[in-house]
Image (cartoon, rainbow, N blue to C red; front, top):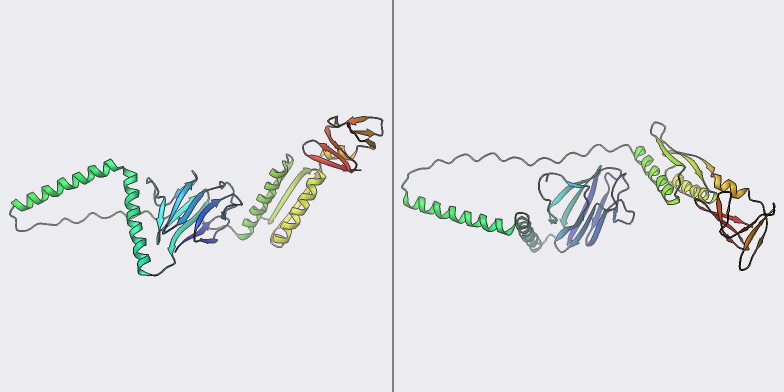
Length: 315
């Protein structure tokens, strides 16, 4: 059986390891990925791998992915038992290794055979079948010439020329030192707060990191319902990281929320055309605009106004 081992050597998840034995494995910034990386700028999917038989296939590769030690060459899309690759995606570096979990001689023989034929197929694919045929013909012609020359010439000794020194493969770029644990936590919390901003579509909300004070600060305005969601998020983050970092939030209600809070309701009319009666005598039907918000729903339980977000006003 072949096992796919993934080890992150730099980034927020430096030192993390994963192991998979079969199926499709995705790696990227999507929370549903088998290997989830929450570093800034990481695409939703860096790699899509398939573990099957005695090989691992790269089915999809992001344009942000770089294969170290293979500059100027087309990276192989297949690795076999005993092989590994060092890969970077933006600021994250990780190593992918294919390990055989069977120690039997037959397993080793099949792995070596598959690796040899797989490498031959990759070579043919990269240079083209026509080029391979041309090279084969050239080697055949050279072999024939050498046989004819040495068969007819009489000589007593020959001098061997020293082989040219082989150029060593470039060493993999060492990963940058991992940032302190506190700095990593600050960035993780900042990312969670920015995700909340995007989900709630907040325009007035900023998140800053103060590394010297080991603090994350948030400032902005939101509706009362969004404020309740934010408080739940802060409680969850504080229970996880409250002892390592400090979180400070300075928040206020939006102007729309204040306008909704100031509405003085006298009563409601239900029926085919529900309406809202205000204390100043104004009658608002569903769809009417008032104080910058639109009346969206009138019911026995309460009212719903819509502006930059939904505002529920219980009766």
